[in-house]
Image (tube, rainbow, N blue to C red; front, side, top):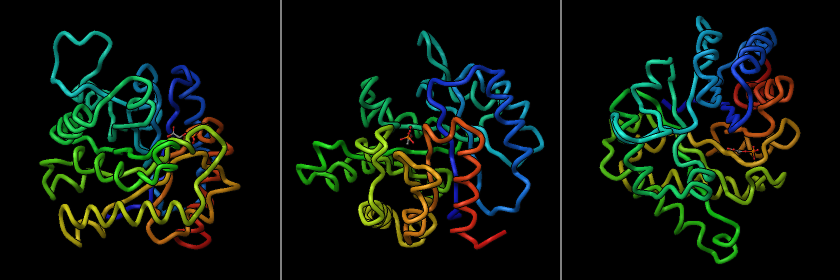
Length: 258
Ligand code: PEP
């Protein structure tokens, strides 16, 4: 189903106690109706605390990464089973920091997507071009490669467990959000690719989030683009007030005042 989603990627921030304090405050402020699904992705060590704090709430828990093997000699890694066991609903895969800082390849991301689906984890699959690639007019080529390799062999049924996040690398953590036109152009291209790889129905049901320097102040003109179904938020998700403001904006944009 094409859901509207507001997801927080906390990256390497917040201890377990800090994560719990955030969630408790956030739940208190979540006193309005919203059709937008909220997803919070704390670091591994805060997942268990966050999971307990999120019990009986509609907020979904996500990990920021995982390994593609079941188990074994992979020091420092965690498996899909471990994430399910701690209460994760989602896992973020292919984030640009994983690709560019930790050298993850399209092939590794593809294996991770398959493994997450096998273990009934929903996936936030991140794609996006670097500044250099954009300046050399390679945006569509890069998106097509990341999408085709990442989703290779994933059945159309399994795709209902996948959400795509368009995150231009040049917009992540830079304070430079894509223009509404740039975001819509990329999202439309992504939806068209999903149509080409699968079919129209699958493409129309795919949620495509925008990520890159989103704040409550700058997101509304991007959020109202026809192919934008929500946001993956880094920096502005670290403070309860700024994240709830983004959610309020999105709830208003997507369904009018609550
Ligand atoms: C992210 O890490 O996915 C992200 C979009 O970060 P920021 O919002 O800080 O640009």
